[in-house]
Length: 174
Image (cartoon, rainbow, N blue to C red; front, side, top):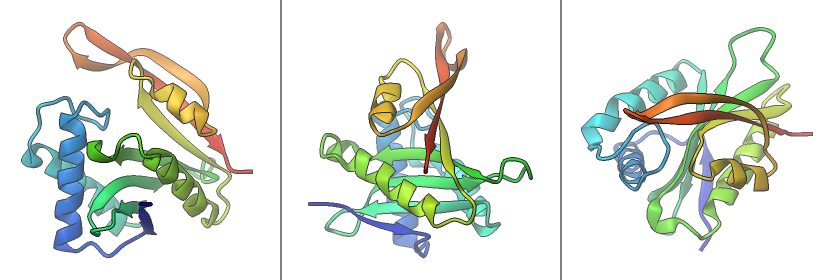
């Protein structure tokens, strides 16, 4: 069953809690979304609040993919640039699909929905994201039309002695 994607949904308590659960579950399954397992909802909550504040200020937009029960199964945040020379592309942050939905093509669907959303923003010609090296994410994003345009070796410290590359990817929208 395909997900239903919504850009800029109303943030209800149910949606807020669903995204918090999603982010916690993805993190605890080893997903590269800013945390290293184990994490609790309370570990993740401040980061989610930071995104919500950016949304309230008009700097971020939320894209949510809900399953047939209406629960968030996939999310991504699109962030506008504030620098006057970089307003022609957006960042894609916190791209995640719930572990129970892995392997169903929802990650590709989420990226396609993010591209569709970005195309509706005035003057946007590309999407840029970064991902943690060592997990095969570069191959996945590459298969979805993103190109690796930079790499900072060892920029992400997952644990002492476990440094990963920060991989910069770009998806032109032309």
